[in-house]
Length: 264
Image (cartoon, rainbow, N blue to C red; front, side, top):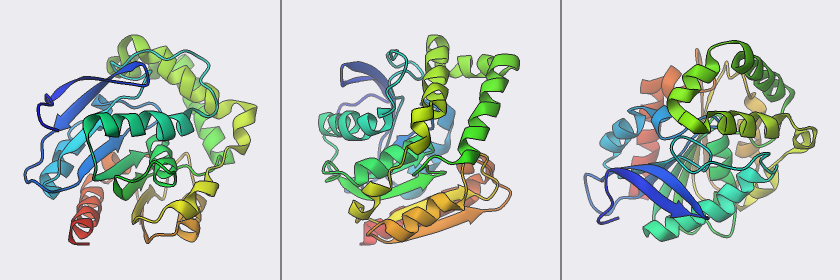
């Protein structure tokens, strides 16, 4: 990734995507590619990518998908296949354009689903391992109920104001694109379990016991169906964002996983 500035924009799938690049401390290591949650962007990760890059020695590439942060806006409504499109079209283009041939995907929530779909597809050649926080492999009643509460908070509370600080003019597109897809009746049957048997690389799953959007059934499906080794870390006193709620435990687990991949 020579010549890549510390932050800027890259083009992929006809969109301008904002990014941050944290250079590796040592050569020859995989690059961490961070995939944000359904309401996230580059900024929502705060300093966690820096800490993870520091602890592993790896470079880290963090980007905002289309419709989020300072990236290009996205037309609404989002198609119900939007996560598959990100995994099978946008991410492969991005990895190829950047010349990344050895990566560890680090995905949170929607980003975790994207990581799993990508790792279980024909485009997964550069992937050495996958780390997923609060992954979704199917839609649950708990997920729908949690999103409905979030929609209410967006309409009546200060959630929109807080999200506007992250997304600026993209705020309504980001929120309505995400919530509109997940609450669409056609999305109730959304399920990506068919990709799990094709995942042959090691997977680390991290989930909060108190996750308001998903249950243990999510990681149990991954553990039962992925073809590669799966390690699960279920954290007490932790909700949907483990790297925020239990930052030290998550940093230690991710670092150990990546260091073990380096030795393999």
